[in-house]
Amino acid sequence: MNDKKKTGGLAGISAGETALCTVGKEGAGLTYRGYDIYDLAEKGSFEEVAYLLLRGKLPNKKELDSYIEHLKVLRDLPEQLKSVLEMTPKDSHPMDVLRTGVSFLGNIEPEAKEFSDQELVADRLLACLPSMLLYWHRYHQDGKKINVVTDDDSISGHFLHMLHDSPPSELHRKTLDTTLILYAEHEFNASTFTGRVITATLSDMHSAVTGAIGALRGALHGGANEAAMALIEQYNNADEAVEGVLSLLKHKQKIMGFGHRVYTTSDPRNSVNKKMSKILSEETGDKTLYDVSEAIESVMWNEKKLFANADFFAASVYHFMGIPTYLFTPIFVCSRITGWAAHIMEQRANNKLIRPAAEYTGPNLQEWKAINNRL
Ligand code: COA
Image (spheres, protein in one colour):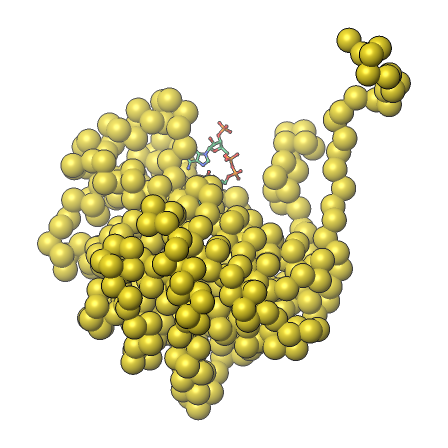
């Protein structure tokens, strides 16, 4: 492999330091501030993980209780932002809605000078992103101006309550909560790195998060969960899926929800999502999507040695909970805001402008000719 191929897309290049997360480190897998993702997903709550990322340590009971109350108070939306959401077209992609919403919030609730309120800005975004998303969704889908202040303690409960107009079952709440934990942080992925690049210029948190949302939107990054859903729902059974995917591979098509830049043999988040997808498929009595997903997973491994990443089974998990496909990637935003904000604060704590060099491939120095003498 030549050097160019090796460094394409900065693969394998260390672009800075972080104390937040390890991805694919031998013997460690995925960890947030030294805690194994499996422990966090099984035993923790998303609010605990948010506190861990944003405050630097796991909260004790008292700290967690007061953090939950603090986030609940920050859920409401300013009237001006509600008007913007009402004006944002019905057929917009909700990722664009969030991008606009965060950007607008930066105008009406700008970060303080010297970023002295950065923790509060991070908490505010964490608390109100689901409100923004569901306010827009329900307004345009059902013509309802919903109340975005519910009594639910958890962000997952709040999200599903606003979506379905009633508090969720504990199984659904816990399942969404677990996916939020799994999506919360992932080292120098494209959107986080975008946020750090913007932050490094001494820009504000709303700008960094707006840019990060733009990066997450693409199908090679967060958009993969929606693309995975579009793939699996095409097939009526496992045999059809196998045949269809083999044909896509023959035509050199990428199968969304598979492969990873850093992991080489598996994505640790996948086994958790897969287990939840199976449980929900049994609950709904609809085995087709799960069987189709499992069949695609086998073909991809047998044919290409490619494994399902976090996005693949997340698709059916969300679908089984009655979440419309176009809200899948925005859910990723509602979770990853924790990782983004933690990286923004970490970048600020030890800042250096991020400005890499480029390998020039253009022409040598050329002679300037007046316009009438040009060919
Ligand atoms: N389906 C089919 N082939 C894939 C593939 C996929 N999902 N992911 C990688 N490959 C193949 C590529 O076609 C390429 O084959 P080639 O060498 O014959 O051209 C090879 O594997 C390397 O892929 P490449 O895209 O160059 O690797 P990368 O490290 O740049 O890409 C991803 C990482 C995640 C962008 C890539 O695996 C991908 O596009 N996956 C689908 C999107 C997705 O699920 N994104 C979410 C990531 S969490």
